[in-house]
Structure formats: structure tokens, C-alpha cells
Length: 17
Image (cartoon, rainbow, N blue to C red; front, side):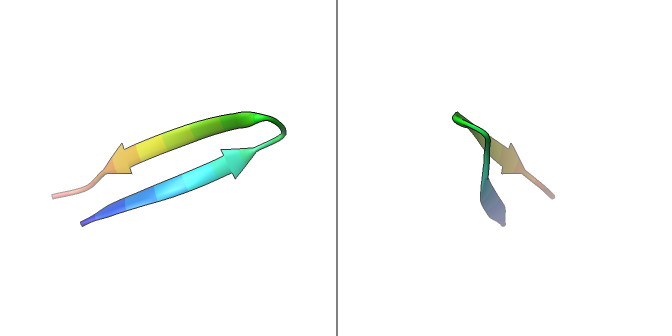
């Protein structure tokens, strides 16, 4: 499962087991 988080103008891709 993964989530894409947008903060300000930055984009994070977080991968969780």
C-alpha cells in the first residue's frame, strides 16, 4: 500500500508494508 502526500509544493511517495 502506498500513499502520495502533497505538502506545499512538494510531493511525497510513502510506501507502507
